[in-house]
Image (tube, rainbow over the protein chains, first blue to last red):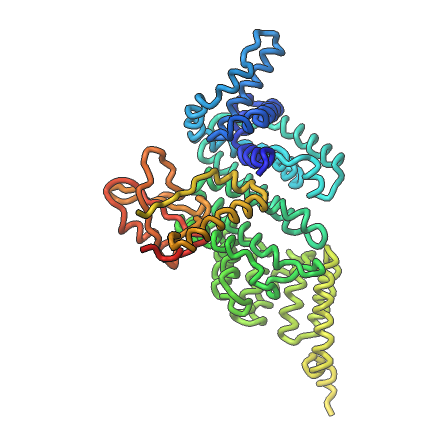
Length: 431
Length: 120
């Protein structure tokens, strides 16, 4: 690896800790970021000569802090202190500093840095963009290309988000347990949004956006290393790994989305799945089920099935029933209905989704599921109505194409078994 | 004499490695491993899963199970077992049987494993 490459990896890995610690020290994000930048420049000069420091984060914090303090002194026209000699003397002080970094304050530093990106006034996409810029250190250009907008537009968006963030007050004291839990919840939601931003991409966008998924996983693992006993953070990491493991099977040669049912499971990343399955078991030991853990449990059941037909639907139904209690929502019930249809038949599932018609009146998947259940019951006329409603609500060409394929299937079913179509008028007429 | 060669590195840094870098490192090690295997000198090789999957059992009157890897710097690595378990729970149960009056045992799943040539 060239100097630039390993330094790049080391700096990027150290960035969240280093910027977070500098932020606590200076209580100003711009100063912290500048200090980090300066430290990186010095690393580029020093590391190729002296070799990599044992703890790059500690090195960058120490050097960044000194250079920023020096800059402040210089600006306030006081005597200039830290010079290059002092900086090159870093290794001796590094050990002591590294020990301090291991203290719990440093965990909360990183959490705080992630949390300031999650201001509720900011739209979700701005929270994500901010986290990518500040925590992950992606360039504005990289973020812009991931979001498929111009660099100028993204720069403006980030500047605006930063301004909003500066106005919001974030406590720098060590948070209490309740506040820490709230921060973790907000940060977990932001990481999940970041992942979905990459995951929901399709077609030609997919290759530029998959790095967003990888970045989300990196942040989830970072958070999990800092807070190992948090069931929902374990669950979130497992969930992201399980979904990401399917990436290679999710798109066909023409970049169309392949449904879970039709995916070639040999293309799944079984290393990621193995890791996630351990995490799911770890979370289960804590006996504090939450939405991420339960969703991960469901994804894990799918991951364990070698074939779609081997899916343990009774298990999925059981997990959904817990999820319905933990996080009641019509969408959860709709998803559960799919499992119920496999276990108890489409009739039971159809009955289950009846009360959802109103809350999900504008939800594409509701009509997709309804149409599929009606198709299974061979109530083709009603199925056709449901699918037609679904097409009207489709947000992408791929969604619409998928429903159209279902309609075609209905047409061929009618052609093969015309008697299956319920046509009460004809029956009433009689001979 | 058998020797263990234990690999240490910054996990977060490896996560930031470009894919080609990881492939290059693994390829280089594979060359060394193949060479040793050809001479009948290669024992088991394992790559462990990330520390986020680890659990630690700390010896105590009633052993305490902690979420996360072994993180102390005062104690030293003295040895290891590799066991085949269907679940994490089973592995923890094994550790419970092994734990002594002092020290700690980290339970960490293995990501990839090569049995080697069977050292004599």
